Image (cartoon, rainbow, N blue to C red; front, side):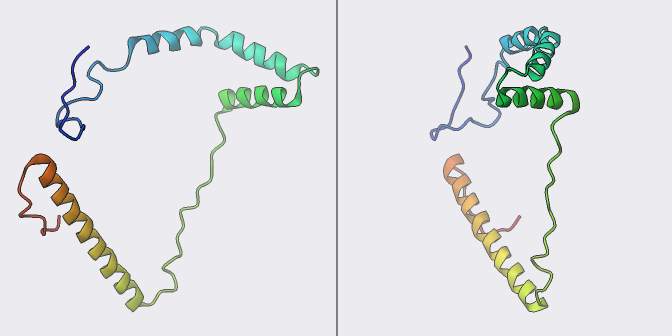
Length: 130
């Protein structure tokens, strides 16, 4: 097993992979083995679905799995509309922008200080905005 270089705080050093060996080869073998049972699995799920002596929850679970595999999971609607700013005045919008720019500057400075501490570099440019 390959050793992994880490910094003093436990992070991976630049250019170092956290998984140098890649995905385990057994994963592909297990996936291929499981796929060999696809047709049988679908038939068994169909039998469970049609078996009126099975519990309702078991039959519903089988139906859901069959539908998901056959047709894909249903799409979920995500509402991304944002009318939050719709009724704001120009002055309110400008104040909001100034506040967010100041917040960005504070976070940017904190990030530069953190990078300087962890990499041993200078934080002389921490006041510069990128």
